[in-house]
Length: 88
Image (cartoon, rainbow, N blue to C red; front, side, top):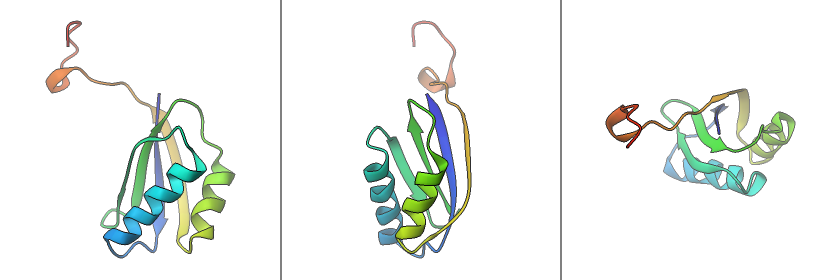
């Protein structure tokens, strides 16, 4: 599982955040836990496979927002309360 972070300029309100989240879900149907923050100017989401950065950039720019950057890192689900317990 990969955690993807996209820096975006132009989000001003909650509807902007929702619009970006919907755009990501349409472009990448397997995206999970999609969330956007206008305060931080970023969107994060999980994916099983690597993301096509050019498709992501085009999808965001086509909505009127500005794609700034993209990063992806391995996501490891933590157990209950951040524990690495085998039973959590």
